[in-house]
Image (cartoon, rainbow, N blue to C red):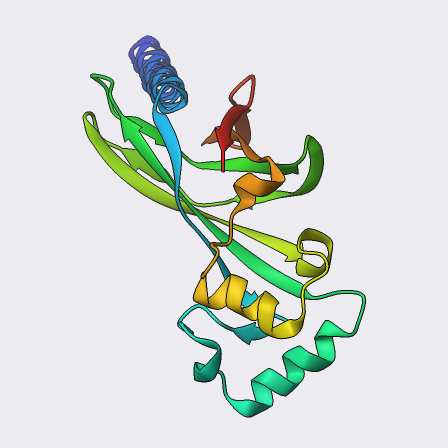
Length: 196
């Protein structure tokens, strides 16, 4: 009876380890498949300027007077804290599902690290399909866009007359995908570069 209990316990432990290692292997394959997807910036938008939500503002005239005055005051300071939303499209051309638990990212402007952060939510891309995920970056518009008056700055960002182009700044987003296995995080060994 005791031998059968020990044998049964041994079999259960073996099965638990086998299932866990299969799960780790599957996640590793999904991470590798994710790294082989085609990535491109689908949309880049400043969604918040100095604490004011501008994500749904399409013209300067749409801004309430109080918000415009707040932005005018902020334009004379050394910083214009803003939030940049970079929508990345991942296309999985592979025969297996691509999936990650999250990713670390770095934003480079003219080969210099400007800011970095984490996307702490899962991304899944089925075979021959695409999926999008957002990278939200805290930026200082004063550092990025120089020598612009407030109306020019707002026109550039909100109305996008000339297009808010990070390509003019030689911007590159580098992502390092990862998955969580138990209590540990397994990261992709390198960075994936996405030119913006």
